Length: 86
Image (cartoon, rainbow, N blue to C red):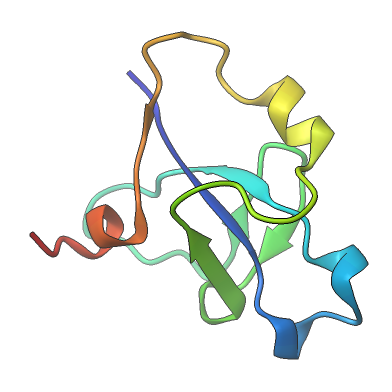
């Protein structure tokens, strides 16, 4: 089952709300911190520039929705899950 998370650019890294749409990302491999997060649509965000979301906020990225796993068993995760905090 693929794990996905939602994120968008933090306000200080965006040139307006238009750049802050909600993207879907595959969860990186355990124990690794990639230099860039790659959304299903191809958008890249540096981890320090990403605002992790626990639910969709703002405009969703339609391309991410279309290209993300359509498997009904995909497990959404939160920033808490990604950080390993119980």
